[in-house]
Length: 173
Image (cartoon, rainbow, N blue to C red; front, side, top):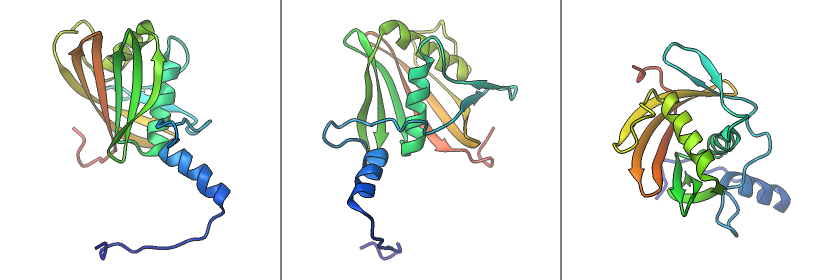
């Protein structure tokens, strides 16, 4: 069935298997994605003029940085940031499954994260009742990641979906 693929078998200790399985696939028992400590040293967004702006630190941007770091480190294809029951949550899509990352984000921090992402993608932060889409470039430890962003109004605020893909200079504007 997989004749086009070359399979290489390797021996690994049970401890190494468990550690890497949790790191790459999340914690199966809880169905969540676990952040790897210090997985990515720096994450920066690049604006239209080429200026790099660090992500993280104050005003709840630590939650955004942690989510982006976990998404990049685990190979997630999407990051979903959305209101849920008076709070906010972040979920990552890994291997087609939408897994929880954080579900304890305050409504205030969620609004700050959504506004920051809209600015990064060059969207209008005052428009909250219409869908918007944009794109921006992330640089994480010198790895370039193209992010396409869709913002949609929903009950409780706005939902943001980031589609993350390795940067291809041939497809850039």
